[in-house]
Amino acid sequence: MSRMKETVLELRGSRATTELGRAFGMAAPAGAVISLIGPLGAGKTTFVQGLAQGLGVSQKCKVTSPTFTLIKEYEGRLRLYHVDAYRLSGAAEMAELGAEELFSSEGLVVIEWADRVVGVLPSRRVDIRLSHGGPSLRLARVTPVGRPGRWIRKALDEHGRVAGTANRSATASAMGDEEA
Ligand SMILES: Nc1ncnc2c1ncn2[C@@H]1O[C@H](COP(=O)(O)OP(=O)(O)OP(=O)(O)O)[C@@H](O)[C@H]1O
Ligand SMILES: [Mg+2]
Image 1: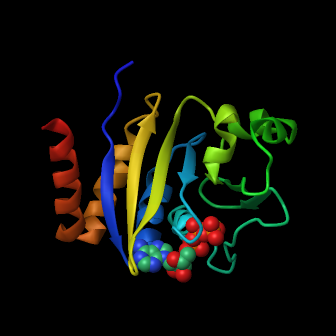
Image 2 (image 1 turned 135 degrees about the vertical axis):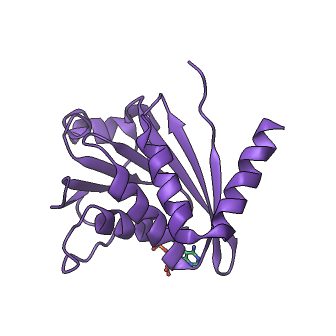
């Protein structure tokens, strides 16, 4: 299986993180799975807030980390399942809690701290690694895993369109580095 290209984006300000989420929410097909990986405060929940916007979830529904429940659900163009694996002991616990059923749903599943439950993640998904690049800068590394489909390219194009030239050039240079 050929490994698809990674894309690195610079996100300046939390608005940029929301916009990235929104672009993914607009493009995602039923059954899509997004795994979010990154340290405390990297912008995972901010991304999910944008995802909800992109799916047309009512703005009255405040998206926050599902701290005391494993999963929060929101009604949109697709049903959004928002999982936070921070408090899980690992993949086995998530499997016990019904991961298989979740991943075969017709909704959109997004998992914060997905690296804690890697063993249970579907082989077809998109990994988004968020990291701190400075006080008001985050980096997002987007990696399609197992040929998840063309929608990821669509989402990245839409994000580039909204973010303007700053992000497009960052993307271009990141891709250029890989091809070099
Ligand atoms: N691109 C960005 N630039 C600057 N600040 C950002 C950016 N993206 C998000 N933030 C801010 O970082 C803070 C933490 O974001 P968020 O809660 O989404 O992180 P998280 O990864 O979900 O953290 P946790 O692991 O604690 O759940 C928020 O104040 C958010 O507005
Ligand atoms: Mg969070």
